[in-house]
Length: 152
Image (tube, rainbow, N blue to C red; front, side, top):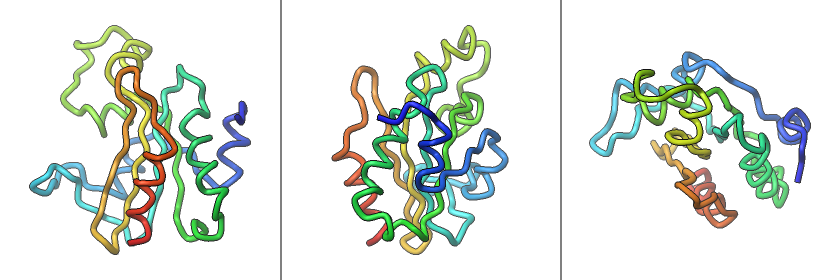
């Protein structure tokens, strides 16, 4: 397992983003379809990794990189983003969670925000997410299933 976040991000060209405004250039969270999926605002395919800064910083990124490593040229045209900023992730995954509902950032990450991987495929008008649940980690099979949506 890679223990250095920078090394893990650089292996397959992940860009670090820690501002909601940058992610909102890809998706419109104010315009949702009937299933609650945000409107896609980009023409590029994306893999977005959202991880808790208080956990092992490369846990989810390592899973994603392990999967990309199996066929790296397939993912050359897919843009990749890594985000561990709690406030950005709160705006995406729990926008109704206001600061009065959590004590501090560690409480927010530990009790309300969980690691996730999102894909955006504008050609198929698809946004899909695999998110860790309380005491259930994201597995390689989850990543394989999710990445299937990138190439339909």
